[in-house]
Length: 366
Ligand SMILES: C[S@@+](CC[C@H](N)C(=O)[O-])C[C@H]1O[C@@H](n2cnc3c(N)ncnc32)[C@H](O)[C@@H]1O
Image 1 (spheres, rainbow, N blue to C red):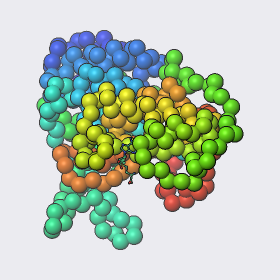
Image 2: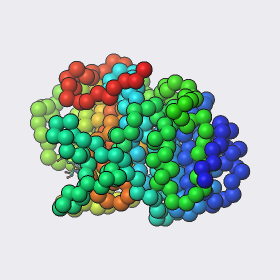
Image 3: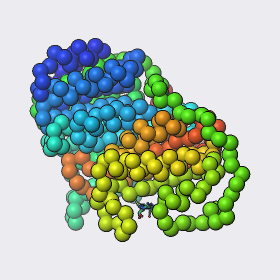
Image 4: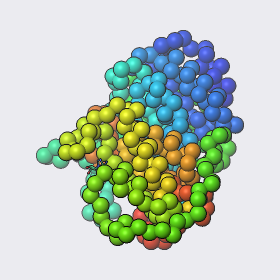
């Protein structure tokens, strides 16, 4: 049974007993005015009412959702950042966004059950063969469609930022094993007949203003630092670069997946790994020119933490979703790498969008 609660979402959740719900779906984009403390209380209540192994889905916009994800990661077990391809959103320069997100956490030790969800097959526009059809050697096609990954690109394009569209909500509900599902606020559900809720805009959290007092661009260029590929410890090398001297920084760090690197321990505690990442991020920020851009690639779990850290230091431009089409694993296949894009200045930065001709643009619906 799906139980809808209205805008008074905290009071609504308080009606439910501890450990009683199989799933809670919170549509934060429809909680207006956006109040971080109120949303935290709402998440606390959701954690209380969930059963052990229950699922918490939190919908929202990538601008602020990482902070909520980091908050929940101290209380529940992170599972997926589901990227839903949605209507194009223009933002303050740079790359428009086409992705609204639903993060999925589970209560307890991380064990959870979900039903496998399938979406109708896509067909390649060049060869007309089906896409995303994993069937082992025989490459059989499941007539019910392909299994969901954590990048949803084939749903009708909707505004999933201020609301959650019916097709997206129904796919989420189908995943839930069990029959007590709480959804709120109900104003956030976009049905085919009605469109409730306000137009989408970006939320900026209080007290998280980026620093503006960076020193002026340095003119000192040390020999051996430019037009060179370094092989060595990034921290030592980055320290040699002057402040405000680099146009673009990009990082593809180890993902803390226990890989066998020769000189690097890829099995660290969460806090150790994040402290290390933050130390080189701080260097990256320092050396970036005032007009410079930062790009950072990682798994969504870590990308949430990076975004929460960078939101206090730089200007968010985009959480770009790389759909990596990985091999079948679990009931939602992890295919998503998050590529963060931040700038040092809110508007005065270099972004050559016209040179991105090969990137497909999502159609804009009026
Ligand atoms: C996810 S891989 C990046 C792979 C790279 N993008 C490529 O396509 O080859 C992470 C890399 O970071 C390197 N690495 C680990 N610790 C490092 C450190 N302290 N300084 C520099 N590189 C480091 C690892 O050796 C590994 O090659």
